[in-house]
Image (cartoon, rainbow, N blue to C red):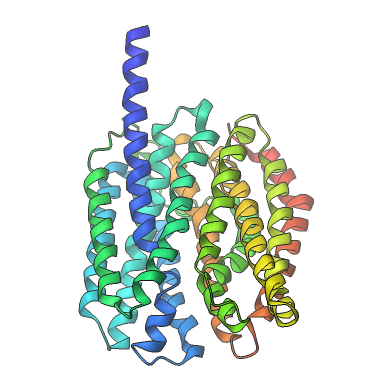
Length: 405
């Protein structure tokens, strides 16, 4: 029995590590494009600045549309197969950027396709890691798994901005394609445990097979939080330039990712000790301080550029630490309200709320760019406050009465 347990431990550990690396490479290829595509649209494709938001948000709309169906499919069929097919489509999409150059319509269609692939891949991968992890270490495992995304956020935007500093966008897309292909190869080596598909548990197709109804209150709270996060990841580089912060602006994402990493290493263990809602509340408060700092950036930088730089990087750390604290806790909250056969649906609901908020943040940031990005982040701080109040007043009680395990 002891020998058998050791073999099982080695199997899940190996698959967990492979899945983490594959996720890092997926996220790295993704984050290479996040801060650089706005520049690409304006500089190379001649898109008006007010149209950048709508063009970029179509990606998130596609992700949103595919999430519920991806969760349903991942519950109905073998998750490893769904994961690999999704990863293949995600990698192939990078070829399109090398082909589509000045045609805006084709670019939008490509972004929609890429969004579909990413939504299915992210949903299935997030569920696959929960299948692999022992339940006693789920919070910790999700925390470390999330670190892979954060490491990608630390280096992806910085590398992407460095590549385009010479105006070489084709090199940017080629590097993204390369990393995605390597991640796909590693993903094929992951060993997924056997599980009973949902179709053997419940063959009836209804709305709750695509959305976890019990998770909708938490989904709304997460949606409000995702709006300022979407504005931060998409427009912080442009906001910094507008505020006079032009040197080392790409390091914002590195500092933000450092905060995300440190917080995940701590919060995951707290979640495993049952402190789910407490961890989320703490993260919300810290994130609020960071988003408020972003809103004040242009004002502070206008009076004192050195203080502006200090606030710029302090906000990055606070936003990273706050959201990093919440991520594994929110993920555990959703999974804890669903039976094992519906984990993918729970994850799809969790990620849908996040994607809708990210898309709204992109759209809002692009539309309000003419007024000033400071207004966007000020609104973002208000939304974090609303989310915190709603979570304390309603979501916590709802979760405690509906959690399954």
